[in-house]
Image (cartoon, rainbow, N blue to C red; front, side, top):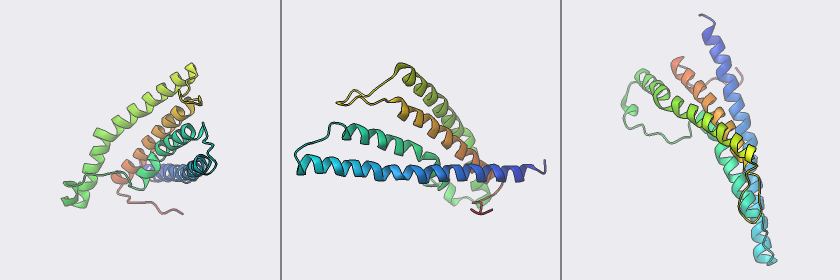
Length: 175
């Protein structure tokens, strides 16, 4: 039993680093879809030759960007919080209320999100689902990203829960 906090700390560090890495890589997607939008606007208004594919591609890239950053946002406490009650509590009680919130609300939601999005992605892949716009792009990569993002969010929830239970605010980056 004495090994648990050390192993938990290693697990927390691994999950934090994984979501940090994914967040930094995925943030590049914002630059890509911004460049595509600028290209499309230039083609449309400067050359009077709009693209047929830019809207569909940027919509998919934005969806990928949006879902993949859930774990990263949770790691950095960037999700919306309604803390009207918990802000008045003592720090120890606040930690335990937040831990209970993870058990009662977050973990069931994250588990259902993960399992259902995986099923959703596999069904889309099996059907060869495509968009119905002017350019028919495959939809399953975005749905697979959603399943992966749900798993990353669930893992980050485990790390945040362990931080609360073990009274760890944030592990040092180089520890």
